[in-house]
Image 1 (cartoon, rainbow over the protein chains, first blue to last red):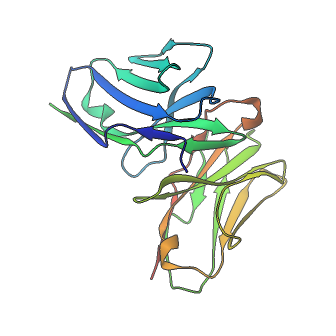
Image 2 (cartoon, rainbow over the protein chains, first blue to last red; image 1 turned 90 degrees about the vertical axis):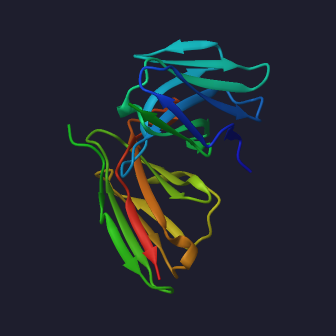
Length: 110
Length: 115
């Protein structure tokens, strides 16, 4: 079965709002997580990653938070823009494979 | 720098046929992975190659196979096609996933429809 999952399949926000996309995982041994963005008609694109020795990691307008106690991670997007509309996947590494969650579709309205 | 190139982008086959998909990784990338994406099952790992060797394989039947050439280009083959094989097949490359980087570079995929 899948090790990584998401709480909500869709999320709708207004332009300029902050977005939070959540992901739960079940394998306590998981130590490396990645977020990908997939726009319509394109392949997934790497956003940011985090290892289990960290609780938080920031990128450009994005922040990933990892809570190992409850096995939960989230992706926060600041000042969401229409170009952020996409499907977002969390993933973990298993050997040399990425195990993806189901994905959350983020819709940004102007 | 050119991205990951997959061919063909779209193809239609009938049940029982076989199909070969091709992937050219980013120059210098030695690891190539394949994923199947469907609405029902999401993104699922098929296999990963590095230096012409299959290092990892997902939970797919033996009808799914692949190979990697000395120039790192890769092909995957699906034999005896079934309706359920209709999917977007994505290829991804990285310098070396064994180095524990989760940053893969994906192509735009080959969309296979099986009738």
